[in-house]
Image (cartoon, rainbow, N blue to C red; front, side, top):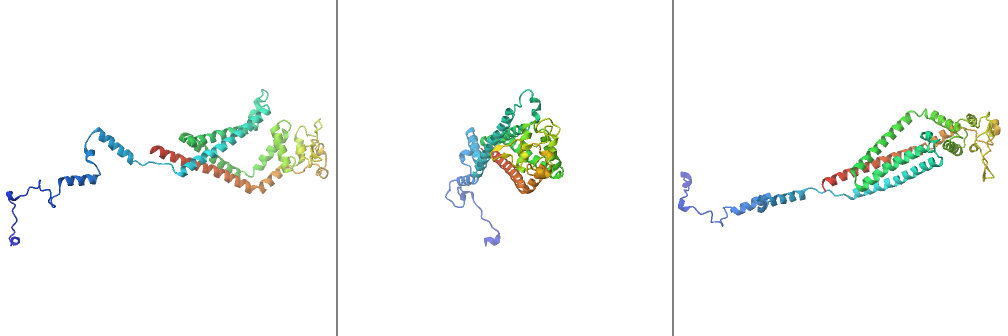
Length: 329
């Protein structure tokens, strides 16, 4: 009946309940419970709503504790000490090369006043430069990895990258000029023969080539006529001769080195000379040696280049780990 008449219940003032004190009613939410719900929703304690310097410090502690903390993994430690040990080994190797170069210069008295002007063309200077660069480079990588020094690691990585680039470019140039390599080798061999008696380093190189490849001269044994001491017009006993390293059997009775076994060899015809000295030139021997060992040469080149690329990758990975560690430390 009341629904059809559209009557509504009129709440009289004296019949209104006291909602402030009737806290047990299930229909009326508690003021404190509503406040607790808000606090639970925001995960904020009542003390944190108060404004004060102590609360600011607590908030900063919460923010710091919520920041991610980067820790080194086992891989990071492995790469760090692997890079350190590799560079330590190559540092020692560089010091050995540097020591050999300096020993060669000192033993030949290259620092003497009369020889200091030609020290720039001394082959031992190549060993000194190579040993110095290798020692400096590997020492920077060694200390950079051990001390986690980003500056040293960046210097090491940049230098290794430059070396890789230079080697790749040198390989490309050598491949494109492979037809002219023979002429360069011939010029170098002839220069070593001309200065055979004057330069101990060139003499050592020429003797090692002739002994190991069992050859004599650049093209044949008569090339030694270019040397002023072995020229047939020379006044000495070496005239028309060849070095003892050209001899088939330079050892008498297998024990004593016969340094005069090549005397007068240029006066002999090829049939008579073949029993005394090697007739073939060293250029052909070097070409045959390169052809026989080209697989080994290519493998060594790839391995050396691969080691440098791996070292560069490890240094880059270690730099990234140090960066993240310092950022979130």
